[in-house]
Picture 1: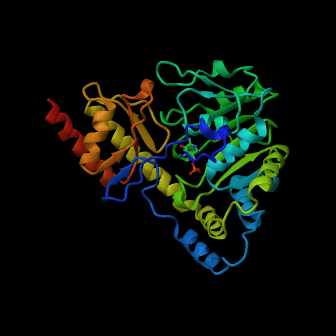
Picture 2: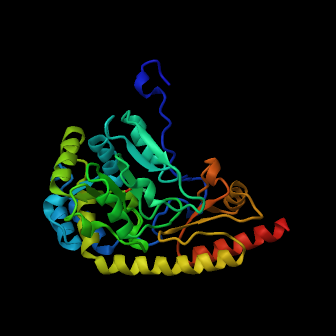
Picture 3: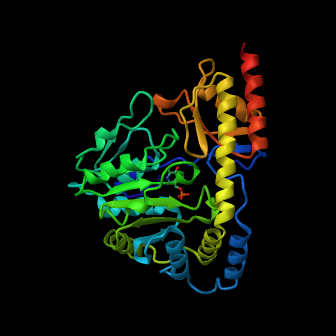
Length: 354
Ligand code: PMP
């Protein structure tokens, strides 16, 4: 730390992204990226946009917003795009939390939520999951806080139903409920249809996972026009050109290529079923996942040990050191071939331990 760094940030414990090593080629099952390339249509649109890089990008994302509104069946003033959904989540903490409206989220969830709360100097409550890693919705009824729920939750992969979330939204009419649907396309029910009905619901989605665009950085929030207008105020006070022209164009292409997206999600769901069956047959305990990853532990090998053994053999999975979940690993669903290699490698690791 330099002697110039402001005291107000000295205490920060930043978010740790998953490893992106360059030293050797790994089978990467650690950051929930898609095994499929971005859609051809997205690539073509991005290449055409590259010719206009001397100009600023459209701060209103006019074409992207129009396309998204059509695809998602929402109005244009109900959506705002951001540089990855991380930026939207940060905007939501900034816009809808303060001393009178502390944030609340599960104690085991996306590790960025407490960091967003800390950097914005916001009070927050971490609500324990049940023993079986599920969210107890009764904890969120009349909670009187700005709620952030990842649905499906990360890193567990466990989803709430739309009606359970609707219940939380109904029972907190004076607080914003933010539903982070980063993984919803892999098997959970989206709350997007509810945004017309409730003024206090913000649904956040990303193009990083199901639309294979992690490196392009594109996400969005959808909600009542008044909420979106609040979020725009934050955007135009921080970075009006937050979406670069190539990403914007790629996003339009990806949305138009909905068939490709749907097919990829279906393949990932099928590969998840195959992987979960095989791992359970090897003795792993895995909650039912609605996401593009599995959260798995094995009675005979520690979480960190398995992670290190696999890394040595060229396979990266995500180990989170938090004590409550340190026996688990989060394993991204990659291609069928990568998952076959994973299962084979784990089988030999377990056999060597006998
Ligand atoms: N929410 C959750 C639950 C996530 O796991 C991630 C990915 N790390 C994000 C949001 C952010 O994704 P992105 O910024 O790539 O849209």
